[in-house]
Amino acid sequence: MSQFLNLKDALVTDAIDGLLQGAGGALTRLDGYPHIKVVCRADWDKSRVALISGGGSGHEPAHAGFVGEGMLTAAVCGEVFASPSVDAVLAGILAVTGEAGCLLIVKNYTGDRLNFGLAAERARAFGLKVSMVVVDDDVALPDLPQARGVAGTLFVHKIAGAMAEDGADLAAITRAAEDAITGMASIGMSLDTCTVPGSVKEDRIAAGMAELGLGIHGEAGVEQVDFSNAASAMHMVMSKLAPHMGDGPVVALLNNLGGTTPLEMSVLAGEMARENPQIRFVIGPAPMMTSLDMHGFSVSILPLSSETEAHLARPVPLSAWPGMQATGMPKPWPLPDGLSPIKPIPSDNPKTRDVIEACCDLLIASEDDLNLLDAKSGDGDTGSTLSTASRALKGALDRMPLADLTQLFRAVGNELSQTMGGSSGVILAIFFGATGDACANGQPVDKALMLGLERISQVGGAKAGDRTMIDALEPALTALGQGIGAAAAAARKGADATASIGQAKAGRASYVPEENLIGHNDPGAEAVARLFEGLAARL
Image (tube, rainbow, N blue to C red):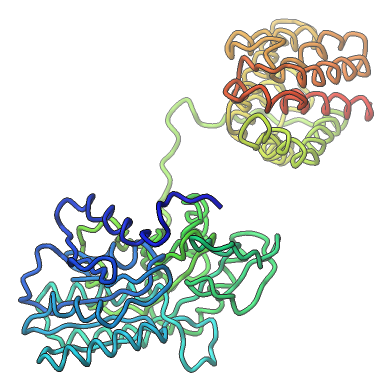
């Protein structure tokens, strides 16, 4: 797998240099490359308790991304997934620790405990006051005597950082950190493993499965579970955390493990809030403690006290920290005048209902095929767009004027404009609206449909030969007077002809090179052809 890096051995130092370049002078580093990689606050004066964390790289923005006012004083960075050396940790301690002392915040991994622990002993030999807390928040393996430290570490960074900024002493900060560690719990889930630079990607999670309780270094999870959707995934995670929540309010930290899209994370955030009403505040969703490019997420929870809430809510000038927000769904505003959905007078016609349901079922069944076809020339969502609109239309039939074709065409157009995304929804809304207007003016249905087609050509700019749905729709409507079978045959001929059109003149396919288009039907035209063929078979 290709990655945007230079030399593997220089990956971490290159990344640190990039972080420093964009920090606006707020950060600096110790002059010890490549063995000592320590990022420090540039404004630090040693008058308060210093906070140092770190560990292997690959978890960005942790740990260096949280160095700054109100959080860490310094971060000691190792190579990817490798603990920094004793000398590197000691250098960081000596560089930022004054009379107030220093707190080391360490994740519970053997390498980190040993290297940070020995560095603390050596620093004490220099006469410095050094405390160390070990974060062990992972509850994936409840019987494990040495639980791993994962994203809950960030709670400690923030609470200790707020207290240090306010001038609290080392003993008080240490106690607060230990209390937070005792109360917190975390667990993660992923659909894929991470890609370690320079190594072959491990492919151990099969399609349709997810791994529950995996570590932030790509370690295998506790178990592989069936994956169906975001709701079931979040339910499994929250079920593991429920015994650790107590009876009062909690704050949840929703962490992106590196490769999950913001869209997915927002869906997960909604599911998390619905899962447990004890969650009063949320930090994220955001990438905070990642595992390179892992397609997963983790949830960390911490019971709230007034002091904890104040420390976590305190603003910090760090772009990597997303802040803490109260949960709750706001009351939606009403639609502006003129945009409220038009409610037609419902009426029934069993034959019309049957035809519409048949059309919808056909498009729903074609979802995967049309998506695959659209992936050749667009963004791969034609099938999903049509099936989503079809499900919505089926659900709206009881509200439709099925006995009045004039009003039905308009009602279908309005429904599609509200439920069908992308340009297709607009085009079809215009088509059915114009067809309804033509019927209202006395035109027969076949003529009205042709006038609807003319309207979408005028508005959208596409015509036959441009490699769009019109290539199947126009011949089908032209032949409709000869019967539905003739219309279906004409639509199929038109759709198949689009496979030889190498240059689309409308739609997303117009941006796609010829080699991607030749040999593949336009997905919109294919949908029209399948629709007419299905109607011909039924009628």
